[in-house]
Amino acid sequence: MSKIIKNNYTEVDYENWPEDERIELIDGQIYVMAPPSRVHQEVSMQLSVLIYNYIALKSGRCKVYSAPFDVRLKDKNNKISRVQPDISIICDEKKLNDKGCDGAPDMIIEIASPSSLSRDYVTKVNLYQNSGVKEYWIVNPYKKSIIVFRMTKDEEYDDVVQYSFDDTVKVGIFEDLKIDFKNILM
Image (cartoon, rainbow, N blue to C red):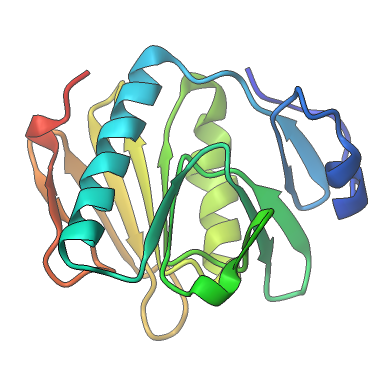
């Protein structure tokens, strides 16, 4: 189960945190992350492989990374957060460094877990929108649902659509990638 420790942590605290504990820093709060379940890992791996294979087939310039992969985000108020999304797709190689990604990935996918529901469905929606993530998916293998948030021209997630694992979902940041969730095995 993830938990909040206190409310006024900084990026320095994040950097100095013991490496054996996975955490995220969001709005000054440290969230200790629970280990992922088998189902979580299977869904995450299959989606990562599908996206990676698509990029390789198209000789694309985008990169796909799976957690743990550090993403440093700055919101519209210049507040720094550090997260480790389940899947990050970055198409601007200038954002990549030895520590991870400095700036908003083009797309983030979070695999919802019982311990992270509030963070995935509320906290991260706001964080990712305010940080400029173009597309954010919440994949919930327990409810067999996918919620897709796409940024519109006004830099808001005004385009929000819910799908089920019976649907095929288009990846908006790519011209012709569609993921058939009927083929995602758990």
